[in-house]
Amino acid sequence: FPSHDTSFSGTSHTVATNIEGYYVRTTAATAVTLTFNSLSWTSNTEIILEQAGAGQITVAAGPSVTINNASTLKTRAQYSVLAMKYVAADTWTLFGDMA
Image (cartoon, rainbow, N blue to C red; front, side):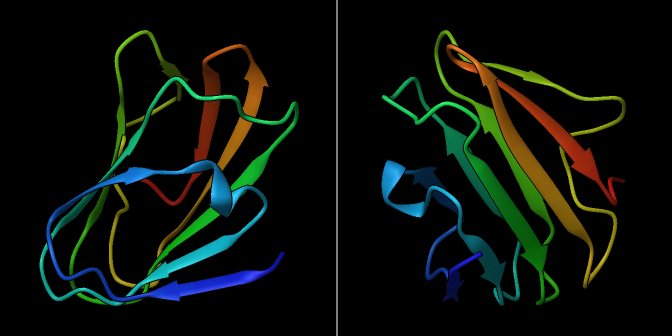
């Protein structure tokens, strides 16, 4: 995966298609929400998210987007890693080290 190491300056961000296949590593000290909107994502896109800082990552579904998951939509602790897999139109599966 290409790396997209970023320290968000705010608390709420919309995930854009330019991070398809990226490893997103957040180093924020405060909680960060990443919203996945209904966009023209490539079939089978995968995005990896790492909470490298103290700020917990919350994954949110934008309008008409579904995020399938077995637990919560948040990382469990610092250094938790989550994976997003685009499985159908506007549908993602989220898995990994969730709270």
